[in-house]
Image (cartoon, rainbow over all chains, first blue to last red; front, side, top):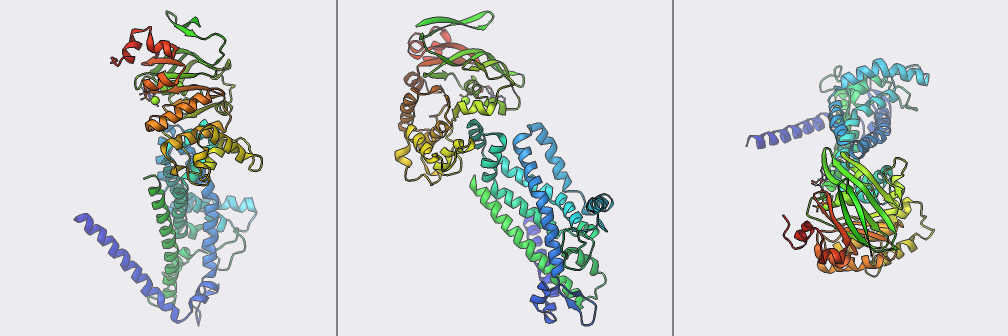
Length: 281
Length: 272
Ligand SMILES: Nc1ncnc2c1ncn2[C@@H]1O[C@H](COP(=O)(O)OP(=O)(O)OP(=O)(O)O)[C@@H](O)[C@H]1O
Ligand SMILES: [Mg+2]
């Protein structure tokens, strides 16, 4: 009874948030059409007349997220395969909680570490004017989505019946051949879902990105350029925006775009995970 | 027939009768196996004769699977298992650090209790081993697949469903598919761990017939719970009890004149 009430409460609150997002954000379409909002890159929210084009923010978000995934996917799946198939059980039991604990590090702490240690290193390695750029943000985000990818992929790999593994090894396959040819294909839906969820986290992440991505408002050409992401922009500007004004509406409209992207990603991830569950049911 | 005394432990030998002029393909020499501190096999010494079918029987939990898995080193997967003693394939020591386990498993194939085809097509299941070991799609892979499916007496039933999922086959067909998959690697020895326990009597008969055909070219060792099966389908039988080899000999003489009281009790159902 109480649980059901709590469940419904959550749903109601979520729906209210969604309604608010759309009510506050959609009116911006009165001054700018959806096309120029999404696909132009001039962002002058307080000039007269104001211009709202978020293309550079979208591209910034995508570049940072893509960098994070390029790093996190091979590392995450490799670590998951190691934990599920190679590490002896005591090692696995010791490492898994540590990885899950990693996801509990507050993002501001990671951002701080990135600002103090990673950014200077990146600046030196690539010989840049500033270490605050898309690459630094992407690397930090990779660390943020790694725990999700590792732990869900590991579950998916461990759920593959051990008969497959034994059959493959008994045919003279090496451990890596077995992982690569039998186990990963059999666990593919779960692995895909883990990547989707990790990606959702990366796209929605604000603090880290804000601290280390450099904050430049132009379409970036290289990953080592300073850039802005959608989340960070909202966080920076929302304090100065006049309540109910155009800038305020435009920031909410960015929120709608973010919401739609993460919603789509989570939906796909759910569908894929459901498929994995049915597979060995 | 000749009699050889196999030494198990210092104070215990088991007289063994076997044919003269038959090569010993594999053998275990005083092998003990420990799971942590628990001794699951106790100094087992036993020959597996070439081109014969050797059955390993015994009550549940006596160590039959553990014993069989010594011969292709599948116990390596069990991280707390420790092996003492030595196992030989053609007089080559398998538990020597220099041994390439992957190579060994190509020479000694294994069929499991529960049919375990991969979640792939019938064709890809049989082609799995050859592909691993470098067979090319163009270089006669489909000939290999067809030959092995024929050898496993499955070709006629699946020749129109090669691209279909292996899971669409019946349990008995899946088990013969697993045998075909092993044959495709070109092994010398085939280990079968209760291959018929999940099958109906008709499928069981087909597998037993198949084993008789295979022994012309391969050496077979089969673990079975089913005494009638051991009696029908094997040339030699080893009786294990609580990790100890109690008796070994030609199946006919072991079943008709067991020399050990404990074997007799087990065969007549008075065990336990
Ligand atoms: N991974 C393991 N860890 C610890 N003990 C094990 C392990 N595998 C098997 N054992 C123990 O070793 C003994 C022999 O097991 P094994 O599976 O070889 O018996 P079996 O004769 O094949 O039995 P069954 O007829 O039921 O298949 C049993 O007592 C079992 O509990
Ligand atoms: Mg067994």
